[in-house]
Image 1: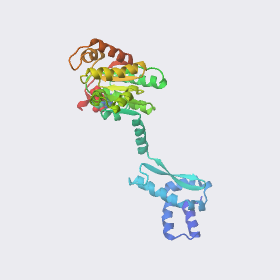
Image 2: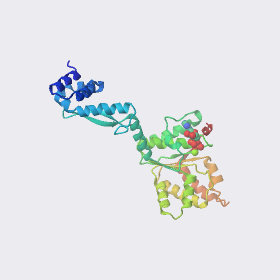
Image 3: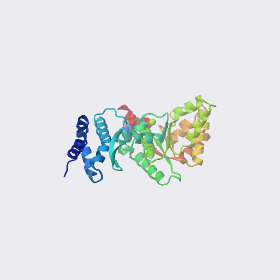
Image 4: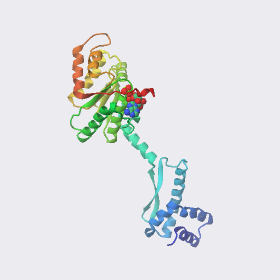
Length: 308
Ligand code: ADP
Ligand code: MG
């Protein structure tokens, strides 16, 4: 079988192409990737067509070497690939594996709105989820939700109310659920409730804030993180939390919670007490009814992972 670099050398000699050019192109034609490509398409390319493709072949080798050496290319994150187009060899640029991963991550993060959430939420995945018997129930319930919701998103699915002490991984699990849903094309919103409440309070009457409350209220899937971590004013309880819960219950929108308190504790120790010291058990009961409707209570126990 005729060797490609040999036949191209003959072609260049016959056509009296200049010596420097020949030297450069000889290297290109000896390149293993180029040879493999030309061999694979030998029946569709003659020497003249290969010669007309020479600038593209040269570009291919050059850019590929730059990618391999970690140098800046003219399309960072992309690598060249040879393709045949109408009896000419052309170069297309395809995302490198690293770039594909980055693009996937970006698409994913666009489907997760994190409002004042800690950074760990972005990195939380089920793949990296450390399971132990203590956390298994919560993990199972999370997986069950994802299965049920993705199979039938039009019907109501109860979210989870994860409670347990500081550092057991409640926020991490919410993040992993949100990221898994995002992977499946489903949008969710996570909101760190104490910070959100402060933001709302600092901007009463500001339209932007009203818009933000609307977005949270209507999020297809909402995760309210750290409910009960700070004392709530009656206004935050009734006009922010109450409004969100009422809307979500009426519209049967999946809602998750994380808290240091069990539902019972949240009701009596938190929702029933206002910052001013009033005790309002009826209001607390009404709010708890909504939370109980929206979410299934699951305790998370285990070591505090923040110490490491
Ligand atoms: P909580 O919200 O219950 O206070 P976090 O979710 O903030 O706890 O978790 C505390 C720390 O432990 C974080 O740094 C988090 O990244 C890590 N972490 C928690 N759960 C897991 C897990 N299952 N697998 C891996 N890392 C975890
Ligand atoms: Mg947390």
